[in-house]
Image (cartoon, rainbow, N blue to C red; front, side):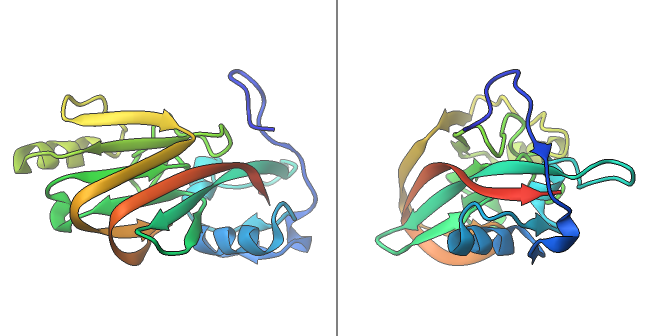
Length: 195
């Protein structure tokens, strides 16, 4: 069951040392694709950062249910993402889109309202001038790049968009080619990670 506003997130979990280990967000998505809600742990990545960086000494591990993003590029197969999907051109020119399930993308706070178990994907789409991109890049580490008059933010369970020409697409930090049509559907409570 996805988290409710003001609700607690995470329940006492098993010892992560006895669980399958995923090295990053991509491996976490692959584990969920194969094993569903069978618990695992993650050692690095944007989901881990969003969850607070993992267990600390003397603190019991917690199990966190995760939503996944089912991503379809053009008419290709569905690819799972646990953290984010980014559709952009070189240097972020023209129309770009960022779909966040986690709050972080490396050291950029791209999804300040994103939660990995709220049943929603936070999509920011728009086009910025070179000067605006420069200013946004300076503010993105704090999440203060939003709101912006040229960026539209949507929180939804399903997002479908056609770009005018193909854009590069990165899923959980890895390039997945280019596409004109990007469709994302949220699958709530699809995985369980213990940290």
